Length: 520
DNA sequence: CTGGGGATGGGGCCC
DNA sequence: TGGGCCCCATCCCCA
Image 1 (tube, rainbow, N blue to C red):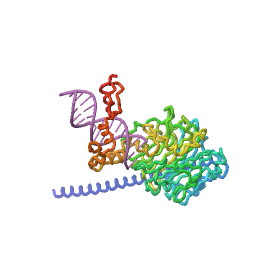
Image 2: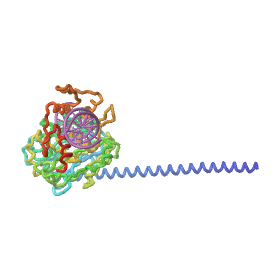
Image 3: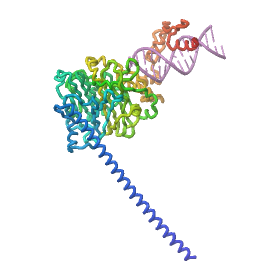
Image 4: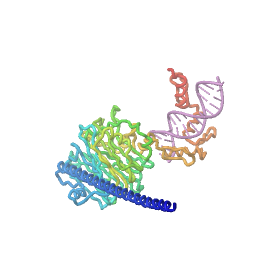
């Protein structure tokens, strides 16, 4: 028995040793395979980056060739990338979006292009504007991504009209486009100029604070930035060139009213976006993150089309950095509007979401668009400028800034409702997204607007600053006091068209008609 | 008791 | 940011 026990003990020991060795071997195999797998993944990623870089270089080259072909005179464009093409540089560590023209609406103007390298602050984005032919139903906007440069604070100007604007104006009908991007300081200026028209779009990404705003006081069109808005798009209406300093400040050497200016590209094919209502968006998903999307444009007078002049997207969230924003652009009805300024800015943290109403647009009518990506600062910005109707330049030539600002050309992407300011569109679109960023500290109530929250909080404080001079009754709201005053005055401005009965409130009349005259 | 109307409070929304 | 209007819900009064 003892021998038997010893034998079993030895067997158990051997089994344990074998088991341990087997486990160790399995672990080793797993580790080896894992290492190989990771190596393969890394190699694939490197290959992807290399291919992407090559693609970007090809795009750059094509764009440059287009420009060179159409602008025989002194072209200086994208010196940085020219160097890259010569092998002098590389795009790593960030992303660039290039604005490039396409079709007949490309850099075909006989204006030189200059690139202001700025002062070493590296923009992480190069914008690609790709305008479709007039016949194209969907103008394309192509956003390229590349590995960005190291310095996130580079500013660069791309101007396709280097001449002195004053002389350029004298050189009409010469067509000019100039694009200035200053994303290093969170400003991006797009300047598109045709004939006497100038477009300057300035993106001021406000996440760095108001000090970085080009106009800290007011947003474009004289509107203050929407609460929580992290960028401040601006138009500069000036025929003078806009330069970007190395420190990122945008210098409008013209000194004209910086409030508004608009592109006057004249491609009729780009004038209208066949944008349909996007009310079927998955609001739940859309509301996961702070977002703002608006379209700048207008409904044509017949209501048959929605002309999108601008789309601005601000997105936040922990989402994959693969957001493609495209839109439906179609030939359309300019209805006297002679420009299409389509701009889209996207700012995120290191990650960028992939959902937006624009996404839906893109899906409905895909265009070759690559994605923007994050720069070293973790911000993503891509801008687009679509050239608009070239034939209608003059219609916008003399439009004053104030009149433009009064127009409700910023359209809700959900309901097409027009607003005068993009910030207002952002606030309005919270209705559709369900976003209520203002929460009461006293209760669970949440509100879309800060003013509504403030008004609500009087419920908790009991503050009733408005008192009736007739009966000492007090109210927390002025409109309620005004309503109450009708009790004393007997004012009943709303009369039933069926029975003549009068009511002090419209809603009373409506209820009355529903109850009494519903069969009529 | 019931229904219509008035009064009030509150939120939504736009200017 | 405040003003103003709208809508809705609720309570109350009264025929």
